[in-house]
Image 1: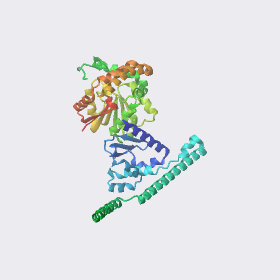
Image 2: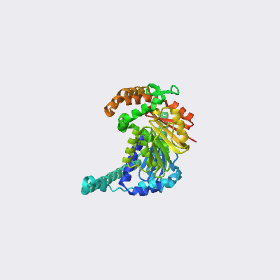
Image 3: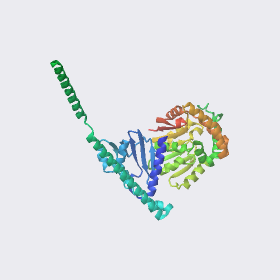
Image 4: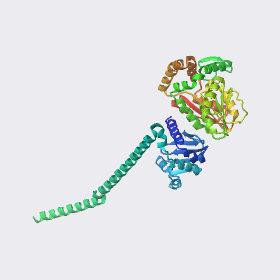
Length: 198
Length: 251
């Protein structure tokens, strides 16, 4: 049943986006009354999108035929945002697509072009100035967080590289061990010769 | 849980004359029609919406289809199907009970769904449609109230187009002992009390609990569908088997 809850929530979000961004209706015109099914192999999950020109239905555990059926792994889903990547992913065997590729591209293009004017929608509750201020603050916070993430990533990469330089390579360790072993043998031989002289 | 013979049938736990069942069931639904939706949400904690979502996902309804929502009551499934079949399709909301049909019609009209829906008062045992004329038939929480279920299934098979499918969403049997005990307690103690408080009618909700217990289990209903002619009959359980969705095709 959890899949029904998940698809119900997803359906609400998608339809809210369609309301907030009228251009989405135009972009999804090619997808009208056609079914796009997606199977996520690692989650063993199948769902489908059916847009009727006004409302998008999201189905869980979809087992029927679809106009386009994509089979892929969860980590590849984020790459589907870029329509030009579809062919590359198919060639790399990361994605199996059966049916009309244009349907997948229509959804991909529609959602990658999504640019919601949040200030316009929020202004109804906060007024123009308040909405703009809120949107700017969130935007600044987002770019600041992004910058922090990038800095952290750089520091982490640098640290790993520095650590790599001071860390003894396994081959060097092996060589050191064999030299120590040889020196120890020489020392024993020398000790025996000294003992013999006595 | 088979009907006892051709002249008697069950009405909850009571055995009655077959010709009495229609009017007794009609009385129940005349009584609950006005509060039907709110009681559904109360009784199932809203989960009936998820069961219906999955029914729609399994229906394969597409643009231009002709869909029969049998025992459609207040039109939950009809509302979705109406949007899926588009202007070139048609949805028929069928129910034997005119009170339920009126509530369904008013609700759907309030939602602005008027173009492609027909309202027909009909008996599931004698569907008023030509052979091979419907793409998809659904009957959600209605089959257990039908007097002769086998005859109703045969009638549905007759009107379905080749390639068409029947979906039966109905209360069923859970094989989890703990859940079964909890469910029994809920059905026979809490449900009638809720019915009394919300709809001022405890008897109708006692009938609901009894009729669920008298309804065929998953495998029996699957066999009944196969006997009526349906192929690839299968079912999936929801909420531990409290509800099951049966699906069968006509080829």
